[in-house]
Length: 247
Length: 303
Image (cartoon, rainbow over the protein chains, first blue to last red):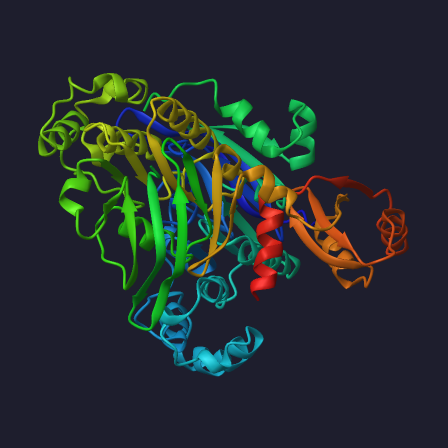
């Protein structure tokens, strides 16, 4: 793994009124790394991701994503990252090529470049026959594949995947992770959240958030060893369960 | 009497067949799980059971009452929790609960004992708007509302999707408690590990039921010897195993890869193949198949 840092977070704090959603987060993510971002619902993951994607500004602390300061130039970050979530990705009533054009445009690609690179993208995905198919009529597995490809089409240094496999069948889930491995192998950093604890094991490093803080950050193997658990799932429950919901 | 019986149910949305000739029988007091991914037809089936849609073909009865003909009477006995959070976001926790009690002609007080173990966890927030609750709390409120009229059967459509591992564990503990009260529970989930919490499960994929049995029997139905292989370099391990003619299947499962071997291949041969590929110090152990292993195998047969 390359030691070049793609994300640098130092003392990130985000407050909403008196509520501290992110309490002094510090971590780095390296180039080509698969970085798992875990935590219970309400632990502050979404808040942190929104800041990393330039959608929200930190209250204090230093956040650098793809070389850009999130406090000062959040708009610039949006062009240098890719984002995909299971809940919202492609437009169902647009065709495959229309979605590619739309997202390419949103990410700041020129129409000429989009048009010239689309055939290559379609053939790499074995999607050429579906170019004019509405997303609505594609099986979920193919949609997932396309949504991911679209999120990295503009060549970002990092892609954020927010619960990309939620509700997906076990075969598609596994094929999706193979795409993640391939992407990371090409030097693109993958920042991923999931509620499937087996998927946490596929990450190079995982961080576990609880009540706004990072409570664990290491390789899955090192964490299992440190907490004496057989799986990341057991570890997750051990770390986050003792506290009652206090939101 | 069976709590729920489906006779050759099919349902089509335009050209898409969401449910394809499904039959099953669920016993009174049973905790029955439909295990399958998005698009398997679980939601359509549950909407039919909840008397909300009429199947294109076939029929379903709950406690002998027909979900189409007797829907009015049946609704008094059904507690339904749809997959999407569907309580009133601009009412408070307390107001939502009162509302559901009132439309079923009962009061929160009357059946409080039933919801108490669940509701008391969110009671401190009873004046908060439902829209401002966290995921775990919304789920507890939705379950409380589905229970407030003391239904005979609970129909829970993916109650744990998108919910963290801890809240999921708690939710299943709540369901075990309700089962002890004699309530029949039909629940769907895309998380295969949750199948173990059910009395019986139906594995469902693209509208068809692949099998119905106890979780234990489902696991025992796996026909081959299954091994878990481990090595630190997970992706290289997977690709190496895949490309070997000695393996029939190789699927990543967390920190290991589950494989089945071609005839005549011993596990020690796999270790030497891996060593030959530069993956030293790998380990291989025979394991008991899980529900997900069975599901993957069944999906392959379905093509």
